[in-house]
Length: 208
Image (cartoon, rainbow, N blue to C red):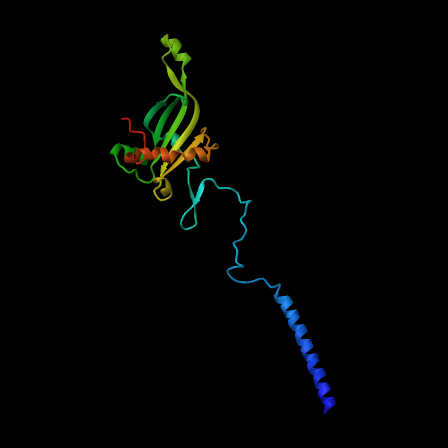
């Protein structure tokens, strides 16, 4: 009876020792398992190398929406004349304001706001004296368009450019469309044109 008791004790001790060792192993493994849940959830690291896109903003549906006009409208040089302008000071420029057919029709009919599809172009040149003409006139009285400086556009699309009053603004240094004005310059367009709210943000009046 005593022998059986000793054997039984030995078996119980062995079983307890094995169970304790297994428990330690499990605790060691569990200790290295990362916690799963809200506390362990993290946003993926930001891609700091993603290319900057200064001319787009995110629309409510996640799509990119352009902030500015980044392409010169085709055929603008053949559009009809709306008016002319001369600016002094540091600009010292001559300007011709042209409009596509939609713009011209709206101008002549006095429609406000301008309908979608309206495009207004402003071509600018240096204000330069014409020595050739002045020789003929015998005095310094003739001024002509000198070197071109820039061309600007207003494109009406009430949905595409909703954030800027329905107008897209573009500024190109030169006539080839390769030198778009920088974002800092283009961001000044809408705040300035807001001062002409009663004319749907358009400064230029039609010159009959």
